[in-house]
Length: 425
Image 1 (cartoon, rainbow, N blue to C red):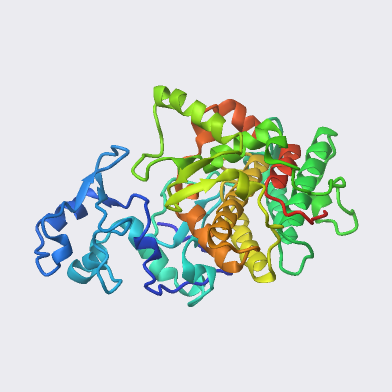
Image 2: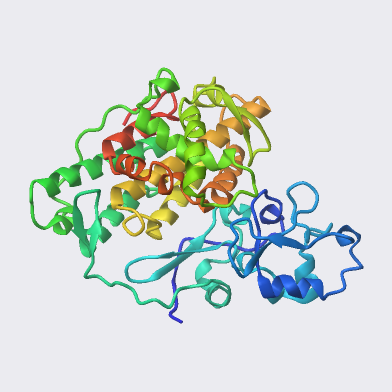
């Protein structure tokens, strides 16, 4: 097994906060590990008496089961002291693989596997613990990597729906994106995404013009920027004024939050057809729905067009910048599973989901502004749930929604949906 490249900026040490053990998500356990629970004596734990330890996997995947829940959304095996009963009784190796691997997060690029961390973890958010580069042995033991050969640097990487770039040009574009989100650069999170969208528009036009040497151009400090001037990023007067494609993409991103926690990621053709009316209703960005991850009803109107100005303080901004840089460093989705433009657009949609949940938390608490506490809770919601779900635009209206993802101009419109009231770019 080859060794992954480890994120040099990430830090983590488990603080036994139990955040990952108290969620509405499914905890998948391998069949052999599930069966081992049946033969063990757990009589010392009254909470387990008479309980079924697991059930058939919601997605019917052969060889796997779903661990049962205890009180509320807690894992059945979360003990009163905040520790895992399986770990205490049978050892760490007996735990589900997904528990062993958390919060390590792997991403397969064209040339290597890159491992960073899940930002839903509070320890990751606060950078508590040693550097990930000091945890390579643990990562090697717990993080599943494929043995399939890499495609290498001879690939042509899709830039959008119609154009490709070389692997070297792809790397140069990602380097430019990382530079935009560096702490030393000026601007808040919206201004930086606006600059990124402008860069993508400029690259697209450069490619259409047939100009050679994109890598050299991007890396030439004297060449200036090829990004056109982007418009001021201001929120829409009302959410319904956003273009329908932008609203549909945002609705598709939030859609897993409307589904039961036991729902499997993928659905059949007939089920997809029944989801369309619900998706169209959500795309109106009005009314409300029962949020699975927040455990309460939310009113979309007050969140998207609420009373807050939506600005972020410095600590919240730095946390989000670290999160975005981690995903860009991993090449997560960008240029591998999705074309470059579509991958960046999806990261922006995830940011919108984070801001949506943060505003929902702020509204529920009666706070007039966003704080790092709101952002941290929202990051947990998105990283633990939405980012781990099969995206709706990979299933429903696949061709149309994906074509919208590939528009950098629409990316600027997506940016406006949850932009604060005082931002220029």
